[in-house]
Length: 412
Image (cartoon, rainbow, N blue to C red; front, side, top):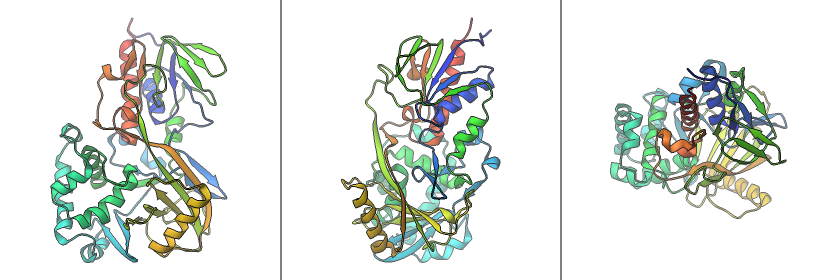
């Protein structure tokens, strides 16, 4: 028998914290979430600026994520699908490359593009088929190397790696050298092959908003920062002390003994502009393959359906390379790059998001953790994608695991 009247605290209303609260409620428990900002979502937030709907950083939901299928209602999110491909800008030329198996309109442009050779394109199909046959657990049990080393070993040409894989996955992994784990590459490639990249019609924040709406017994306190915690007590920044019986720390590791390893972060810049027309008419990501360019990828958000309707086009630009530019200098440099490498000009700058903690930067990534690994002490558990791998799927899995581990300890 379990005592369902225990006081449960969750620190952080990001995806891990919200899923943990959801799982607790599904098992008859309720919690109080302490969130230091004014809204839920963690790194998944959407703003309305000058009438435009802008996510805080260019993000997508891969609808093949197992945890997303489990915890989200896709129909209510009204997912808008990207076309499975990309427009590649290289040396003043523009090529379209994609998956003709899922979108036949991409067949001719893919076969005739100068990105890679015919053997590369067959290897992509072969890799996709091979990863469909691998389970996610099998992928994360493989020997870890870098993404670049994996692609080279698989036999992809230097041109294919530099002109397609590097800019495409730099935008996902937020690092320009393909140093990210080969396990993560295979997992993400598998998810792309088995589903679609999507965005909710209301923006990426619709995901935490849906999770939040599913909670009926959970209480959330916003603008509350937890400074410290002991075995049974939270201490807030204002000195208030709150007693609890069990807790889940669903934030980055910032408490003593909450995580034994130093956590590093990947950063990026996302800049939004408006224009009177789209250089890419369909919902395809644009990749800038020139090594001298600072910008990495672009996307016209108005090529997808959005809750907010506008007359002008909305363009996001992502920068993953390190730089020391001021805000004004970065805006100017990005506009120069858009003109030089993409032929895109006559833009109106809207907003710059400098995201210092965009993704956890870790090695030896995994798909599962043991209960021992997430147990801080007998009544406090850890949650967050940093414990597994930098993905929405991992954030959800981690929150679920922490809640179930907590429940299993609450026996009289």
